[in-house]
Length: 551
Image (tube, rainbow, N blue to C red):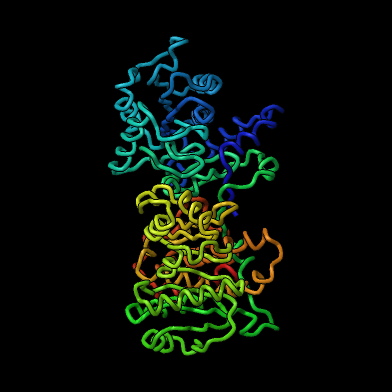
């Protein structure tokens, strides 16, 4: 599992080490230099002779970059440092100068010692001066801000970063951007993007991942994330993580695997209320996802047309009422269909009365727009996309829009969890799972091809199957903490399997058995963009995705 901690938690963990004289900056700088060298070699370049530009702000991240630049200069790199703060780290500055780093006094950081060079001096020339330097460098090291920054970048940094982002995007041979700790300008603790950000190819983050590297929308700007061990693990162990990301091994530990004594009833029975005369295919997709995930039985309850389609595709599905261990309700049901809406309400009430876990998808989310179900348990998992979440929040008195949810998805998902009491799985390129308490789970395991009609129905089926496998455990749990936290972990596991199934269906690589998966914000090696997929392709690839996890 990857865990991310807030800036305050990191600073608190660093304090005793700094007081004891532990050279944290030396460790960070050496690791940063090693990662820059590795990126050069990975792209077929020699380290000696390569040109590296350091974008240096005030504070410790700038110090890390200057010390790293000194290491690279001693290895034969031509290193330039654009100083973009009134004052920069003095120790790093001295080390860089001694090693032969070429210092460009963009904002007057060298004013006190008279060592200015001919770099752009005035604020209004900062942008053009830095861009000129950047055009001659194959690697840009972004150390403009650190984890203490709040809000978007201000001028002149905002203009510099916007110009560099445009330069990178328009360059036929794009430079490699290595961010120090976080890409400058992102919300370190919340993943917000309130202004220009220089997208990183690699983020070298110190001690632990930061929440903004896992949370959208900022996560998409972090590239591959490399975590440098600074010896903070023991201190951070006492601090609850702010954000988590499950990896393959975590899901392998969670997924229920049958033993010789199991039978169809012990493996999990899912009650499925999905599809309608207008949207019959949703029932097939949800059932396909659930069966591929390995449960014992589906009891499907629906009208004639979707029932016939489900039976044609899956003759093993049972259409009689009976005992179930979880429910999945709402996929492909229009809440304006009065008869189906009444059935959804009936089955949700029964699930809550029996203390059974339940997935509420699509049309079932509208059951929560009024006070019929004011307080749900954490074992109810809502699966909205951004528009549906905005509609739910607005109906419950927190007026918002889809655009606002997209800009701050973690905050809005948390708000929905607090208002409803349920666990919220907010679908997106990075899927977020939030319970009323506990960390946010952020899963980015899929591919952009997964943005296709019906993919959410497959996810509802996978999640329903997993909850059914744990249904008896959750119903009998007398440990309140487990009952509160387990549904979120199961929902995150379902999102991982769903994402990996999409990658396999698109012909993209996934880690092998027990593999850990990518780092935060890291696309897995693919060899290309993959191929278009349909939701039924994703459902068909679920067993193969589980094979990669379970070995």
